[in-house]
Amino acid sequence: MIRKLSTLLALMMAFSVQVSANEYTNEAYAVYVDSMEFVTSPEGERQVQLTLPNLGQEPIEALIIEIAMLDDNKQPVLAYPANAEGFNKELRAGSISAPLTFSDPLQPGTKGIHTQTIGPEYEQATIARAAVIYYRRASGEEFYISPTVMLWNHTDGTRLTPAAGGLYYPGLTQEQHDLAYSFPMGFTSESRMLYDYLAPAYGLTEGGMWVMEVGEGSLAEKLGLKAGDLVVSVDGVRLAEDMRAFELGKTKMAQGETIEYVCATAKPCAGQSPRSRQKHIIDIAAPGSSGPGR
Image 1: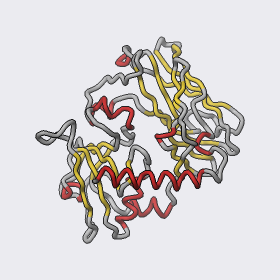
Image 2: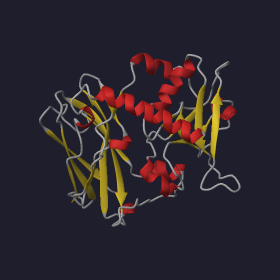
Image 3: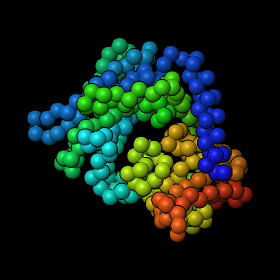
Image 4: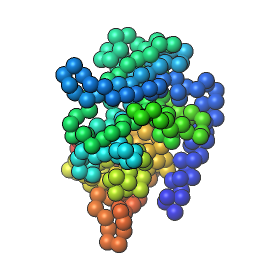
């Protein structure tokens, strides 16, 4: 029932976003990975080089790319243990911001180049895949690309083009940022999202956000969250489909609303495989949270 409810709400949200997106001209794909290839640095390091055109109408000053290393069968190559700590060490995302990579914001009609060094721990990987998951215009306007419609490119020249149109989610308003910040849950998390395509490699059926550390006496501890848990959905919205769901949930909690968390637990329960799912109902009668992080 929990899964059905979460899926229904996520689909409803995706539909509403798609209607909004139609008011724009392909905003989800204003910048994307146009081409990529393996190259060798002057120091002999293995690298992957990405070409990123700005097809939009405004300069782009920052973006985030999801990068994954694959074998010949396009299965994920993991260099570290398949758990939260191992995921934290994996090469997954490369952040590109104007001051660090582009000498100036990426202007409309131009292309940017990003080169990512690939460590020797990925020597078994023969293919790299990459997609833009977020970008910010020079005006400050933010766009989060729905993982279900990412434009994936590969070093072997193949692409994964979604059947659906380009769904995107606008960034949080300053008011929403402030509300979310005012309500700490008391745990730290891996900033990168575990997406659905990688979940099976970690013994999971769906993606989400890893819990890395839980503060003593925090709201998260009182709810029973533990390091190694994976937050799957917040308020009926799957995090692997909308990266903003966690922060949006906190804005509601800060205003006294009751929010449902669904998690995959760190340790499987007897008879349940690969991991059990737990529902955490957060009643904000007396917030008072302490401890590290979010």
